[in-house]
Length: 469
Image (cartoon, rainbow, N blue to C red; front, side, top):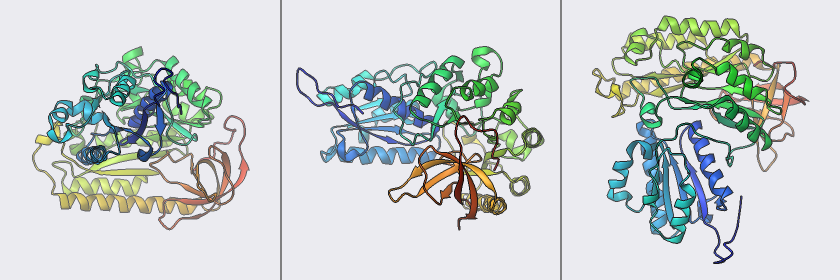
């Protein structure tokens, strides 16, 4: 945080507060924006009440996300009209996808600047222009960045973990998705850049690196001509001070050779993989343009179970896709019950105007989509509750994410990604970023979270024991 005065005018610096929406990739964008501003002398405020400029990083992945973004814009503009803000900047995916519409919307005429997914080099000048009462809209509109450089970041979360973006964009053509239209084609970072960013994060005290991308399995194809995700994982994991490395967003159609080996054998790579299957019925997968069949998905998942003992698999599924029959849904539901994913999230299908599926026939009624979603989540809750009951009395490795004012600590096992998976309530003293072996005492009433007591603090790299959950 910086607070510098202009020596000539004795004017205090702009005060900016971030409002963040969206996914882990968006969080990296938010932290890069804040890092640029802070390094240039802008005061970063934790509360809108202390700021004179609001910076909103939006999401546009699905309809409800866009509605949330628009609601946030309206709220910030109301603050501006009442004199509680001098300026409002709208950044991120919503601007990248719908900028002409946003700029032409009379309701949004008081937004001072729209910033898409550029290299963000204009953000400092935009903030200064708003602070000086100048027109800032003309300063934005740069071209899509070739590959983002995320070394300068102001972390917004605990130092227990940070997201590491290994690539940008996506080459797939899934019928339900508009991400390629928003973020462009797949662009991998160089391995040396991943190392530099990891070193910078470790220097800030980060313990776990969570590797994210639109499709992590595609890493390296564009830059090196071959799948290099295993090399990327080793590059990050080998940086001194890295305790855990986690891989998210692996496309299930053709995992890179050597991936299971690094998940199984590298001492500080957690035995975990986020692999969104979206469905298991072959007909639905074909309609989704997922370039796979239900049988191939089953084979991939079984291979992961066989080659990485104790692996925790997270997936996501979509219910209510146009044309999904009752038998398709029952096949998915039975698979969720029988395969027993360690972690699972379910989306209700949302028709996106710019997606291929928007024009598909045989839509599923909303009330039926809601029923199917509830059934999937009930089944998964039973799977997790049953698994957690078996963990009572065992010892697992836990990383602490938060400590409240009263000293109560919460953390995660190696089987849990931050912010989206299960948690551990810790009985006893603990500090953010601490890693220890903990004895599981009980399961919380919701069936998802555990209660544990520390028994042994881990020092050094990651220890030899894998601490599988």
